[in-house]
Length: 133
Image (cartoon, rainbow, N blue to C red; front, side, top):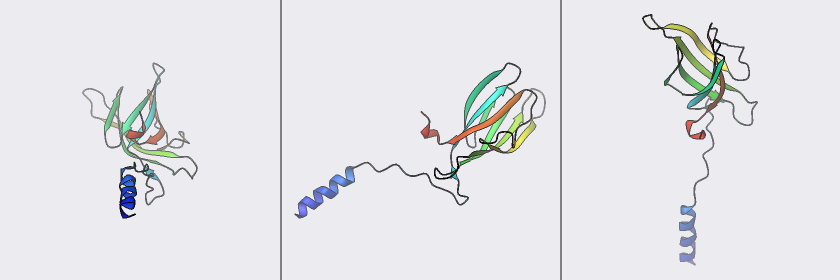
């Protein structure tokens, strides 16, 4: 009987662990490591999606974006994704010009929008890089 129990325990140890549930921070939000952004070049009409890892600089056109934080509500709450962005316009031979700094909300893109003559940027969702294929 003792060897039978040891066999069962050993077999259980070989089973894969269940996926870890997303951890909710003290603010009640889930911190993620990547922001999914969409941007529009108003001159060409070109729209593209960008995966911007938190803390890394992403560049397109004359803009540089750093996502400082990306948070989403837990699944049991109303869906919401918010990212804190720093956006600069970079032109050769000129100092960088800050064009936006603040939180953007996926459910209300007009609430805190970046105002720029050529580009629009908005948050689609907050994800973990390992969640995206």
